[in-house]
Image (tube, rainbow, N blue to C red):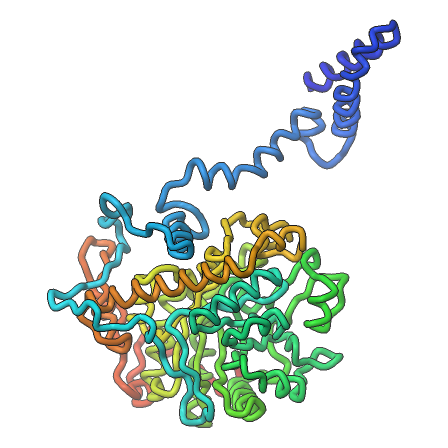
Length: 525
């Protein structure tokens, strides 16, 4: 309040001096008069108590709050701090993407005595050089698939054009082309930016059927077949839910919706684009598998998979039982952890819905093994995977390969400014503002994506070799150890026992899951 009256007094004095011939004081009015107007507006506006009680100076609260994340990130947080991604992991992505020094001096910075600390059990018979990191691949496609695909162990997770800028999409795709790995289009549709540089693509079909929908928003089989025939499309993924906002549907804020995006998605431009929380083509596990079969036929036999975040265990059991009844198997299942990222999601959905990735991978791997058809279905893990150890650990738990979204975003320049939902991303990655996206140079950032991918796979090969493993198929849960709450040490094999082949079909379902398994119904989710 005092500041406001000081400004009033100053304005009064400057006006009196100016009217008495002291013209030099007129220039000071250019500063004091706007402050007076601001203070007057603050004093009488009804919305903010702080501004009414402290006109003018009260604006400092919003100023400091707006720069707080940047001050914290650059001046305060330590190597093992930072949210949602630790600085240590952001740094290793930047270093590998830029081909700068990525070794660690003076020892580890992590607390090896903390509960939950995990490590890989190495071997005294290490076999360095026995693995070619360029050939860390896995074949996706069971006997029902006519055109299987050899996928890299590490790929670009689902991110739509709309959530990302055109230059970001093109940089990722060109990087995928250089490195021989795939880019998932996200549910926003197959766009010219995904196709320009010829990188391998996984075309994701979400509940909005963007890119293959009719005027009413229903699935259009002719439009799907035409786009699925594109040689760049190697696999198709049916998205049931995602980790950051499971059972909510996707959200593209209208602030980021351009005429171009609306044209690609076939939607209106005057409101948020919200994908429905569930599909209209099917409403039960049997229908889902029939849709998988239909897409496989329409695509000419390409691998078809599903993506979901695990919620109720009974619902995934229902899908597994439907597989057993119909003998229709998706070629892959992508598991998104509840900790997965997104451009925009309600707080409660991000924080408190969805099974975390590691638990979900174990659950799905155990289910497919216990049902007897694990060999038919590849498991893809997606959620906070940045380093070689992250990859090796998730493979040990049961995944066959990995996707990373935020890791690849860091590679093209993301600085975790947490402005993805505002259209003001300062690095031009998650924005539709052409002024900002121009700052992202496609050729430079594509090289960084390529280098990050290559360096991470090289580090993965070194870790596997250190454990005397000859291939990714040999990594088991027993290779990873964890410090428990009582400070004992257990392997992940002890923590997460794996069932024997067909155990569940023979009635040997773990007691903790028996109720979910018995209640699972193939005719209902």
